[in-house]
Image (cartoon, rainbow, N blue to C red):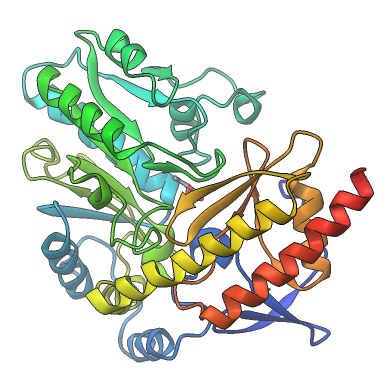
Length: 390
Ligand code: PLP
């Protein structure tokens, strides 16, 4: 179907931070398949884990215990706030699962009326009908029939508006610690702490969507750690599989107390192949030295981008983001697609986002040399775009 406005290039091979096209051109991949290739392309440990599992067992369904799920759930619960995990295949499914957990919690707590979820303008939770309604972006909902009910949309950062939106029917507050698709817009740590307090004072669950920010992307294993808070429920996907489709809903035992046999399910979710890869990704990314290294490199990327803003003040308005989830907000007269195209012409892949922003999401294994190279290419691309729009 014609659902994508694709760039006219076919990649046939990947090596670390590099993609090789069918005519042999090498591209520096600072998009990571939209924050998915956390360990770059063809990481030897991931390839080995997948091949070893492929020789043994691919799929059994969730009618039976799945060894890999138990292993990955043990790691996720050891490394995070969570006591239990549900596995699915994508970010949208993880968000849907998190919404179900939150509503069901209140249902089994004797408050079936508590169904509404406060969400934020500029959010993105995926393309299923409920995830679209949760985010409330009218452009994405147009023509797809009645919206799913039960979401109250407020401006990020407007604590008074959040408080005013809380009613006896509110079940949860759901947010991305940094809105990725929305333009790399972060909730400041003090706002996250205030939202956590509001949840506690009002008996609400805090649901985080860390589909894009999770698994080391911001320099912590999960972005909530920066604010010193913990959620009750969290959606994870993208980087967890390093390129193999997988999603997960993490929860405290209390929040998930309504998720009893028969309340939710997935045929493929937590498939042994996905679990073999996710387990290896977690082993590597959760190492303190690995995350320390991400933070050091992130500093270099941020410095490079700040330099670009100084050099190209006519086209760049702001540097945003945390860790290796960085954004350049462009001046109003410059379209992100133009910069993405100019960079791709010079063999650097970056990704557009909302709020007139481009995103840089390199693999977490990017070297300082690759970061410096990306900054150089981006600088040339910005110069070209600046000349064209003048
Ligand atoms: N949530 C966030 C924060 C995302 O960035 C995305 C995808 O970009 C999703 C959910 C949806 O994930 P998927 O495309 O895997 O369904």
